[in-house]
Length: 363
Image (cartoon, rainbow, N blue to C red):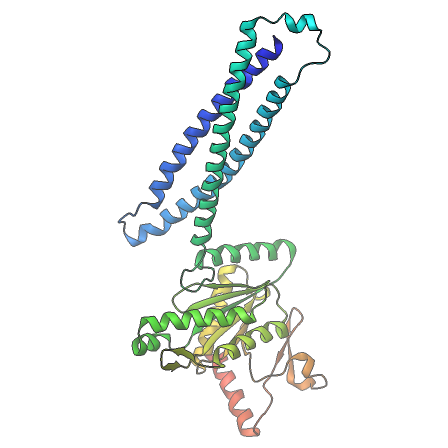
């Protein structure tokens, strides 16, 4: 009779678990309906609510995953009990087996049938929970992705930036922030229409994806604003990435119907070595981006402490061996390369004057 008591307790436990699962499924469904139901709220209230919903969805995913695992363990337990019930005990004597009353045998048969039904219902509940988990994970992924370009959005960028900064402060792994802006994007919308602007954004995102590396973090953080997190701060390496970005965007026009739209990009760079917080990096990169725009756009600048350095029209350290008078130390193992004359002394003097005027205006 000890086995009978075990089976009865297992059946009761299974029923309780099923009821808990049904209640949780009903609660998840009500909360999901509440989250997805459209609401007419002011724009300033939308962001805090969206953040709250996101946290709730993340918690729901974690909970349903654990609950699904608990159901799997319980199904396995029921299967073991059923197998034990259907297998005769070799050590039990024939007299002991014959001593079981017909009522007890009938009760065991009923428990077995109920166990089968309960197992089927638990399997169905597990499948439902797994489906809900996949749906919630998809929703969270969509909440971090820009629908137009397929790039990560501002929320994902802020999270990644905070994580990179924490990694930098704890483990001394520097990184570089690159802010980018499509030049004269408003004119594209005004002249060709917003559909053309959308096409330009998609084309820019596609081209950038061809030059950024798998370890880089590319996102769209505003209308025509994009950002890139590069997990290193060596000046030569970062400049190479930035130059590839500028070149791939200016390489050819965007085809929109019968029109060819010429596009360029401006960018500003800063390393975590030259900031005391991630917000300070954002301000520094924005300052460098402003310098690029002030210099005629279609170019980029780097920010190191109080110095703004153009990323084009200069040699890298590997190409400038033996030209010691064209180098200036930037600290943290980086080297500032002054622009070398390309078309004679007049161009060199003009370039130097422009750089000094920029430094004075930013000072």
